[in-house]
Length: 338
Image (cartoon, rainbow, N blue to C red; front, side, top):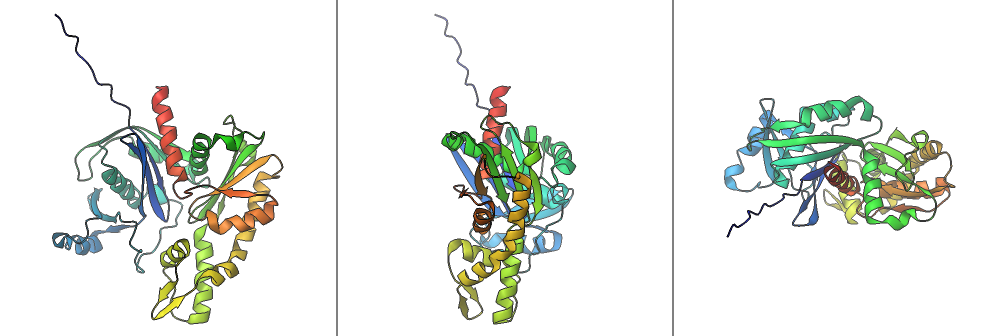
C-alpha cells in the first residue's frame, strides 16, 4: 500500500515594528497569539559599549543585545523596566530612520523576537518624513542580514505612515467603531511628532485631511521639567524619568524629595493647545468623524483635543502598541494576498 507523503504548510511570518524616538515596539505571532515587546530607543556605540559589554561575564545585563552595524558594535538594552540613564541624549533628528542607531534598534528587536526568516516586515514613519525616507528604509532592510547572530532573511518590507498602523488595529479589533456612518480620525502623538489620518470604514483615506505636526511628549515633558526646576532648583533633564512617573502614577524621586507630578502636569498642558488647534486645521471639521487619540503621548493631548475639537475623543487601548499591532496585521494581510 502506497502511503502518500504529508507536507506541513508553514504559515508566513509577519513582523510589525514601530521604531520611535522614545521606544521601539514590536508585534509578532507566537503560538497563535500576538506578542508585543518594547524597549527604549537607545543604542550605545563603541567606547561606552565596550565598558558595558565587559560586565557581561558578571551576568548582570542579560537584556543587553550586542549587534554589529557597518563594523561598529552597538549595545541595545532591551529591558523596558529600567529607567533610561540621565546621560542619554535622545535622537530627535528627521534623518533618524536612516542612521546606524535606528538599524541597530531593528536588529535588537529581531533578536528578541527570535525570528530568522520574515516573509513580511512592516514599519512606520511619521508623516513629516514618510516620503523622504520610506524608500531608503525599504532598500536597507529587504534581503539578508548578519549583525552577529547568523543570517536573518527579510523577504518583503513595507513602510506605512505611522497612524495607519493604529487605524488597521482599530479596524480589526473594534469594527463597531466604524458602524455609525462616520469616518475615523486617528491622532497619533509620539515623542516628537503628532500625525493625523482620516479614513472611511472602507479604508478610503482622505488625503486632504491628513498631516504631520512637530510636537509630542517631549514638548510637554520639557515644560514640566522647566516648572520643576523653577520650584525645586537642581536639574530635571531626564525626561524619561518624569514620563515614567506620570504613566505609572507614582511620585518622582528627586534627590531626597518625592514630588507629586500631578499639579505640574496640569499646569503644563497648555502647551498642547496649539497642536490641538493645528489638528483641527488639518481635519477641518469633526462633524463627520469618530476621533481616536493614540501613541505614547496620547494621554497628554486628550484633554486639549476634546476641548478644541468640541467632541468626544477616545483614547485607544494600549496606545503605545497600537501602531506595531496594526503593522503586524497589515503584514499578515499582505502575506495572505500573495
